[in-house]
Amino acid sequence: MEAADPGSELTLIQERRENFEYDVADHGDRFLIRNNGDGAKDFKVSETSITAPASENWQDLVPHVLGRPIGGMAVVKDYLILSQRTNGLHQIRIIEHATGKSFDVDFDAEDYAVSIQEGREWDTSSLRFSYTSLTTPSTVYDYDISTREREIRKQTEVLGDFSEDNYQTKRISAPAEDGTLIPISLLYAKDTPLDGSAPLYLYGYGSYGIIIDSNFSSARLSLVDRGYIFAVAHVRGGMDLGWDWYDGGKLLNKKNTFTDFIACAEHLIEKDFTAKGGIVASGGSAGGMLMGAVVNLRPILFKAVVADVPFVDVLNTMEDDTLPLTTMEYNEWGNPQTKIFYDYIKSYSPYDNVKPHDYPHMLITGGISDPRVTYWEPAKWTAHLRDSKTDDNLLLLKIHMDSGHAGASGRFNRLKEVALEYAFILKVFGLSETPH
Image 1 (tube, rainbow, N blue to C red):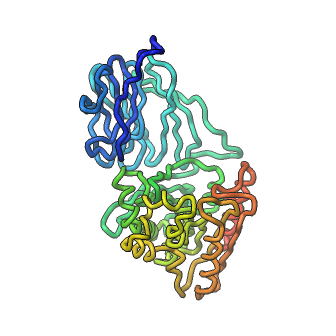
Image 2 (image 1 turned 30 degrees about the vertical axis):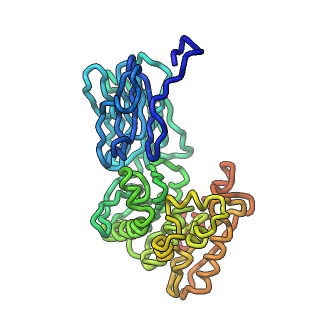
Image 3 (image 1 turned 90 degrees about the horizontal axis):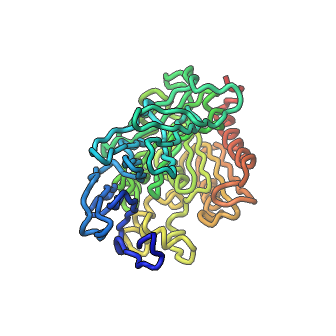
């Protein structure tokens, strides 16, 4: 369509087709198109003339690289700016239109998260992005592409005497059962001993392709200042390392998510970040399913488990297609009306695999108004655990009577939920001292 002629005909760039995604930006007399065509599951960038936009005319500009997903692009007069990941970490790549030369914005930290903030200026060499890490509050930078210098524009204030110099962040990898290396993000105070004596908080999710980035949290420092090591296991089922990373933790590969998490816990023990029985594991929703699976598989690794709004009655829920989310979830877990999926889901569904053995201390939560994980899932799972477990450890169930899947609304009500979780952890570990 000609912008100067409102009555002109619209031009279709590409018809919809199954499993094909693309987005378009214009640059002069051409379109730049981020797309997953021709098997580019982690995306590539193509170009084509504005006058001939159909896909048969597309030419690769930035080729597809498996495991290096391109998440987005921005276009200004002189530069193409790509948001992508390498080895699971954010990367900003800048390509000069005139020469094709490219470079990556340099980030010195081992572990961090970055997001581009697109502007409205066309003829500019300035790029704005937001940067954060487990030790760095969210910080907005203006970056001069021509000089490669950056300037802080804003940083989230942290109350008190916080200094990121007091903390250390690392990124390590744990070998999974099949040899795949699973990234782990770590945060700890610099005076925390790394001799196996520290308690460790291990978070995991691993579903729907969701990536758990290394964002800053001031609330988390309450544990870290008491000597806890905070860790995130970037298990398969997320999309940290591209589509294959997601595919490797869904449907008939779902058990990889659970064994990856266990491998991360064992590796952290082996490397003396903590000791067996010194870990509190935490996850919510599909991450709550992860918690339910690992306590059935390897309960001895964990001192305690926090499972928020956990999706644990997987088989029964996926068999009930009257529930609003069930049929759309077939893409993630499979349809149990098919025997191979029925058998596989039944083999890991946390509720269906509770058995008589010792379980860690457990805090289980639910929301009375939760439409995604209905409150009776954590309730019936708790009842089944109480009937089956052979230990005297704490098993607490908290159903929030005024919240849904995402927890309480409002900053302070949300902090009360965090306080409940941390109080449980400190009680179980017998650590009540004030932070150092």
